[in-house]
Image 1: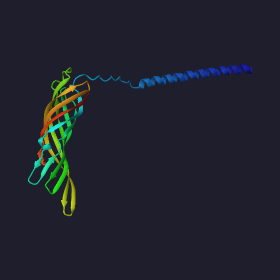
Image 2: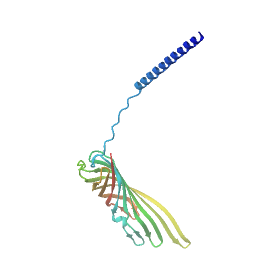
Image 3: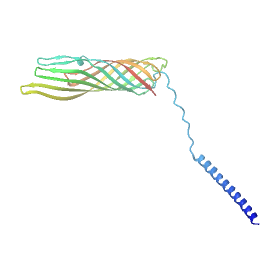
Length: 246
């Protein structure tokens, strides 16, 4: 009798355990279904479109280098009791960023720098040594009228805009006296508005890289002399590279 009770109780426990397991499985399935309904549907993001050939509608950034043909940059000034001489004519370095406006028109944001070289001013009593540097900051547009022709690897372009030119001069003066040699240092700066305009070519080497060259006239005239000159206007002939992207 006792053995039969034990067997019956074991069967009851098995049935209870199976029922509990079914209840747990049903609960887990219900929770999973509810979570799936509450989870927001993820939108499939389309892969980015490949870069199209040509120049139209692309941003550009790059750099240019070349001479600035201004006679004032290497001008030698001789007076009755002084002489201003520059040892060399430096090259102009320019960095630019050209975000797109339309298919053929881009903004033209640029900043450059050119030095007049080592300068010496002598009047027989005092010798001054220094450098003069110009920093043109330009804001304008670049127009590539044939940019819509994607198969043309060589594209003409125009650049025109206004500029703000900062000029600095740093010099050291040496004065010989009866009591010894006196040395002094000084730095001055000038700011002048100006403008630029020119034309050039863009040679596409691929969808993202291009060579570029242009000749542009930079106008700049200071109200006060910067190491013996006020007007540094002249022609720039620049060659460089540009990176294209959407």
